[in-house]
Image (tube, rainbow, N blue to C red; front, top):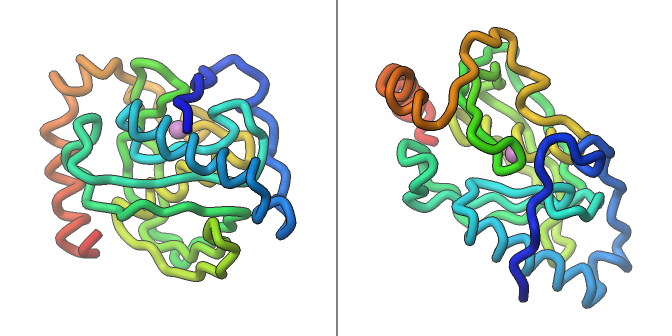
Length: 191
Ligand code: NI
């Protein structure tokens, strides 16, 4: 396993839609090693998720994991999840204002509207079908990661650029109000 370099905003790889992974490729040693590297890199950088495009591999693969994350202390737990060829479909028109950050967009956060309930269809790293409903704050994390595989970053979805903030100023001016909203969401959805 290896910790990979993370691409930052401006690098074209982040704007390239990821290609689908075939069943043969999924079973290959190279792909399985990539999954291990993605997990290790995400954990090393304290990411809540990481998409393969962010480590310069434009394939439809992302990882999510939240476990007392120091970057996002208010996020509810997400057990380690690997999504291959994921498709996210909204199950509601209702959105919430999520204050997002991204390892590929250093020192910037901003408010992004995210659906409160989505369906996620994907394969896991063994090729088993995943079909689940994700709700609340965690639904925002899934939408953020799958956006990367479409060549999108959270900045593309920021509607009010006056919400953009460095991480220090987020903590100073915006975190308390956001944590209150996040708590209410987690209470309502349990995630
Ligand atoms: Ni990101």
